[in-house]
Structures are given as C-alpha cells and as structure tokens.
Image 1 (tube, rainbow, N blue to C red):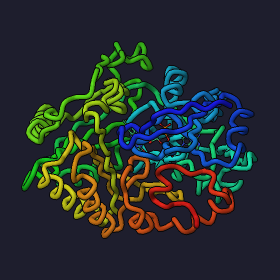
Image 2 (cartoon, protein in one colour; image 1 turned 90 degrees about the vertical axis):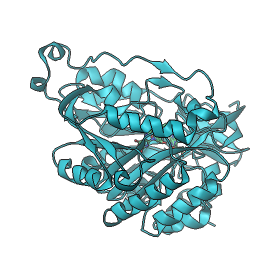
Image 3 (cartoon, rainbow, N blue to C red; image 1 turned 180 degrees about the vertical axis):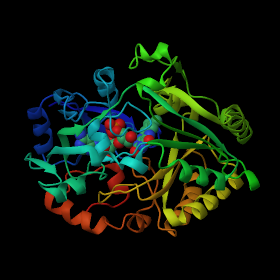
Image 4 (cartoon, rainbow, N blue to C red; image 1 turned 30 degrees about the horizontal axis):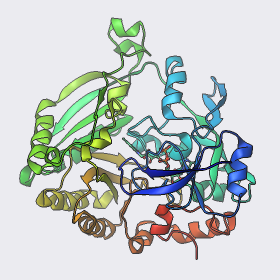
Length: 451
Ligand SMILES: Cc1cc2nc3c(=O)[nH]c(=O)nc-3n(C[C@H](O)[C@H](O)[C@H](O)COP(=O)(O)OP(=O)(O)OC[C@H]3O[C@@H](n4cnc5c(N)ncnc54)[C@H](O)[C@@H]3O)c2cc1C
C-alpha cells in the first residue's frame, strides 16, 4: 500500500508532526501494512484525541476510518456488529430514527468506535453505566503478526482489558459488537441547577445522582473565594413519549438540528485574554438560572460544541491542551478546590470547564475511577507546561490521574503513580506485541513500552 507523508495533529493542534499515513479499506490492505517491514505504527480513527495519542512522528499512522461498514443489527437484543471505523455520528444517523442511542458517548459524535474503545471513553452517564467497554460484547484485534484475536470478557480476557483504554498500543481493533440503548424519544427531560460554589455543586451531584442517567456541570474556573467553583448543572433522562408536548410527540426522533456556526480562521490572542474569558464565564452563569423541568433535544445536550465547525481554532495557531484529571471520591472536594484555586490565581483559565461524577470502572489503563473529574482547556503559551506539571503533582498526591486521550505533555516519571496497573499491562503488551511494533508519539514520550 502507498503511504502519504502528512503533517498531523490531534484535536488540540499541539503537537504537530510528520507521519507516513496509510488508509486501508480492506482487511488484506490493513494486514499488509501491519505485517509489512517491521516499522513502528499506530492506528488512528477520527483524530479527536487532543494530544499525541494518534500521532507517530516520523513513523506510520494507519488511518482506519475507511473500514467503517455496518455488518448486522439485531433489534431484539439491540446488538450492532460493525467495523471499528464506524463513527458515533453514523450510528446516530442510522439508529436514532429507530429508537436506539449509543450506550456511552463522548462530548463529540465525530469519533470512531475503534478510537473510543482504545480510549475507553466515558459519557455523562458514567456514574450509572461506566465506560464504553462495559457495553462492548467483543472486538477483533489485529496483532503485529497479522493474526486476529477475538477479545471479550470470556475469550482472551487479559487482552480485552489490556486493550480498552490503552490507546492503540496492543493492536488494531477491526470489528466489534456493541449493545445500543433503547430510547423512547430523542429528547432529554431534566433540570438546570445553578450552584453558587464547589460545595453546592457537589451537593447537587449527590442529590440528583440516583434520579438521572446523565449529569454534567459547567464550571466557571475563574471565579474565586466564596464563589469558587460556581457552576451550572445539567441533568436529564431520555424523555418518555408522554413527557413530550403534543407537537414533539408526532416525530419524537426528529428534533430540528441546531443551527451551525463556524470559526473561519485562527482567532487572535486577545479573545482569550483573562478579562474576556472571565466576562464570558460570568455571562454564561447568569444566563442559566435554575429550571425545574426542561425538555432538551439530544444534540445540544450531548454535543454542544459539534454545531461549531473548527471550534479548535478559537485557541489560535499554537493550539491548546485539554487538561482532564480525576480524583478518588474521598479526595475529590479538596482536590478540586486546590486545582481551581491554582487556576484562578494564575489567571490561565479557559472558557467553561466541565465537572462530572464517575462510578465503577474496569480496564487496566482506563482513565475513570469512582470520583469526580474536571476537564478544561488551556491555550498553549509560555510557562504552560510548568504550570500543568504543578497541577499533576496536586492530582497525583491525592491518588488521581490525568486522561491520556487528552494528554500532550505529561512527564514519564508521573505516569506509573497515576496508572498503577502499568506494570501488569506491560507484561500483556510484551506477549501480544513482543517487538513493540505498536508505538506512538504518546507512548514514546511517556515511556509506556516494556523495556
Ligand atoms: C469535543 C470533544 C469532546 C470529547 N469529549 C469526551 C468525553 O466526554 N469523554 C471521553 O472519554 N472522551 C472525550 N473526548 C476524547 C475522544 O472521545 C477520544 O479521544 C477518542 O479516542 C477519539 O476517537 P477517535 O476516533 O477520534 O480516535 P483518534 O483520536 O484517532 O485515536 C485515539 C486513540 O485511539 C487509538 N485508535 C484509534 N482507532 C483505533 C483502532 N481501530 N484500533 C486500536 N486503536 C485505535 C489511537 O491509536 C489513539 O491512541 C472528546 C474529544 C473532543 C474533540
């Protein structure tokens, strides 16, 4: 197969590097690239990981987006069989009108299932339904030898748990079965709850936890003192038909799409000046008063940024880093306060940050753990790496970790403390991929590979 030398980045547009990109469409083409001449390679889906997980500087990237056939669907069990290049957007196009929804979805629908399993993505329902791996029945993994192994909880279970969350480093996921969720409408019935500070936000998460499948809070990370962590919680369940107004009940799976906007070019730096960000965050908070019952179409609820094309240009040419961390439950409040105070003091904060609660989790390198997670964007600028190193130390001393799918700069020394299963994972990686063929810019930066 022919490769194209291409300049690539993740969604954060930092870092950028040259890679040899292959775009197989058939299994035989993929196998010839994988078993080729022993060069290092990494799979790439839709390129929505923010940092360098789907990059391979001066090495091979296998873009599997063209391997995206849907292969079968059983409406009784809601089980879809498909290739790993199928995106959440494609699942929504085909199955939403029939009353099915992805069991777990990240905050953008423009991701492949292969990339989502490799990151073991979480959604707004993690506190109830865990991460994507919990809903995957099996996947077929192509190893460096070209052999395909079926991996599930029963078959090659060690490889299954070493692959979910391991960012493509055990092989290429080519096909899978996933159980979709049955829904009665494409609308969410829920509440908007304003929380004046961190303690109110935690109290609201705990109070609404058992009533709602989906919850998320938008935090103003630049507010300080008594208003530190003020936020707007959005919680909801898929609405039953009887909850919808008569007009919506006639076409419950066809909400009108949100209007599309676009960021046509890289925005200049002043847009992100602390004063503008502070003003935007304050306005957002004030414009969202509490509301006891709201009906929201699924798109603005799950994918608020998908209606703004190229929104990653907001952060300008130098790109940005999304910092996402999680703390164990008992450390979450103190951890969040410490990190928010450091951010507010530094004036580096981004537009709205996101706070979510996580529940139970499996997977050797999966990011979630029972506790709270914070995600926020920082434009790339002088001093940012050092500032984020300080945040890492705050997170790790409380038993927390950062998310590899968002990472572009973590130091290798910090990784083992954040991911205590790394040693056990390396043993499985060593037997599945003895010559470390599956390797990426991220894995080399973090020295993840077995010696
Ligand atoms: C706006 C936005 C919102 C997001 N919200 C969330 C969120 O709420 N929750 C969350 O968990 N994540 C979230 N993410 C991150 C995103 O879901 C993950 O990075 C996901 O991995 C992206 O999938 P992709 O197809 O773009 O994969 P890529 O970015 O192309 O690749 C990601 C990783 O998957 C590996 N990979 C890709 N395809 C395969 C394959 N077939 N076999 C083996 N490995 C493979 C790559 O090697 C790489 O390590 C968000 C990202 C964006 C841009």
